Image (cartoon, rainbow, N blue to C red; front, side, top):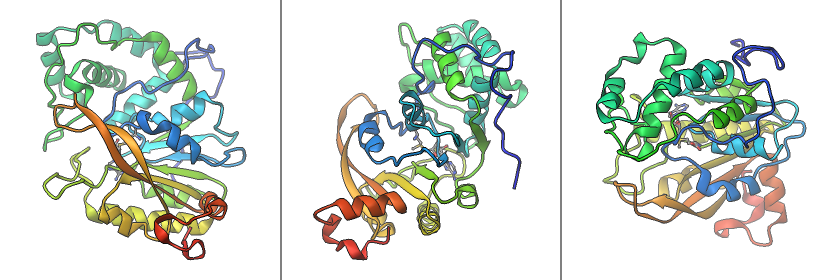
Length: 319
Ligand SMILES: C[S@@+](CC[C@H](N)C(=O)[O-])C[C@H]1O[C@@H](n2cnc3c(N)ncnc32)[C@H](O)[C@@H]1O
């Protein structure tokens, strides 16, 4: 098993945030599929983490992680955050371990169109890790709609956003995020690794790229690899393995026949989420999404329900 990356020990002096920040920790990036809107529904379905570890293998903006941290709901055994996007993970590592140099670099960026396109044109591989993290945060906050999108060649291709005062350098917010990430394991890896790592009593929140709602919509391309039906099936097998081991699992995904089929027999619930409903992202509406629970916390919840979901008898639930 690879050594886990938890960063410098707590309390060390250096570029890490070492003083208790005065603002609450929150996501420092705006991420496609971010879960702020769904937080009340998600928080209601998180089991007690007093003796278990928290895993978020599709971390993106990390909305649930920061919400749990804010409320003091992460237990002594801490958390492991991971994602397949190497630039994103580098950003988390730099926020955790190099927040002061990162703030300095960000403060030198400018909200100007020509400057934006010059930064966008940089090849991230030629930058050092702190410069790369500053570039990602700057582009994310100043680009159109705050979306991270790469083309087929893995290049960031979102146009300039023309915002009056985008907050790409917010020192207190970054220090608060850095403080919240102290001692947290942060890894660049695919979700399958969690299958080996999570133990009975742990809790895993899977927020994968969603199955598209219509046949014409393409499967979301968050990274050059994409996340097609085979990956969704692999994820459902991973959920079943973890649940059978005594790990509590929560999954969010779209309300589609494919997702219902993959998780048939688990505790599947419909929730309403506020989502962008057109490609311009500026019109919002209520969209039905699915939250799926499996493992010990799902068994407890299913036993407490007067009526089983979707007409399934409680005793047939595979939770
Ligand atoms: C729906 S987003 C997660 C959003 C996040 N929960 C939030 O609140 O911002 C899905 C994430 O999955 C990541 N991803 C895609 N394929 C992956 C894989 N095979 N393993 C791990 N992460 C993957 C993407 O890079 C993206 O960050």
